[in-house]
Image (cartoon, rainbow over all chains, first blue to last red; front, side, top):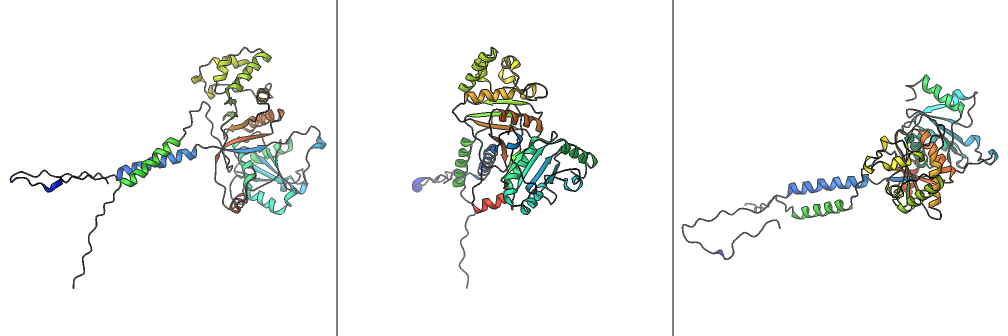
Length: 188
Length: 216
């Protein structure tokens, strides 16, 4: 295919002393061209898939005006996640008060290890009746948009049906601050 | 007895066919690629496992850049014209409707809107603009007003509210945007993210393996 028929037709005999012209092959090595072609293909494949952003849906609850209209969560099923600065995550189960703050309030991170928030969510999910489980996400002023999206993503990764974004309370802010200041290295 | 000689075959392969295929694929990918237009507001979005592609029609896009400034953009020029006209009659801003229609995004308070629109399009860069004021501790959250206008021009039609936030944007900026949505009863919106693979072994991964449809 890549060569052309260069042989002269007929086998016409030339006279004596006439030198035969040297036949040059017209065959071209196409390997570099193929290489280049595939290189460009890989480039375009990567750029097409990368530039397609996805959208994550979020449904907000309607603000209830009266406190009695608000949804109640069972204490046994409540799991609160606090997002602090520098990608710190804190969590506690049930209700946090002064008596149990030391043991109930734990620090975590976005890692996938045993300390990570995913493992903590899974532990809670396994030990709770599914319809009672409510995860309350409380981002503090210090955390970033990425943290919030990551934690919402964690909800869909772990298939949590009920979760809510709630404002952080003063006691929690203070606890987060205290923990971050006292052990900046430990909560990393 | 000598063995019959095996004919020595040439190791040259004809590359033409392969070359043809390569370039056919190449032209296909070149033609289907849509390059992202250069963005005036640089934003690095976080990644999520959401698999649904972001809509590209009837969008109302709220952008939060890394310092927490908020910008609004819409793709429907007729709707933008309606908003500009409403602003001119209700607030007497006297804004240039044609310039407002052409503006790719809005990045200033109502009082600065005229001077914002006077800046040539190519000089409107996100990092030099103040953004729409949203911090309710420093003044009114003007995004509430903007979302009310958007809601009013899209009455009876479905708009896609998109939120595109930067990784480093702080939560208060995000919260004031959510507040503006809530005040206008916009309870469904979508956040633009980069696709990410579902972690192997997680509950969602198991569901996907079983072929269960994800709740979106």
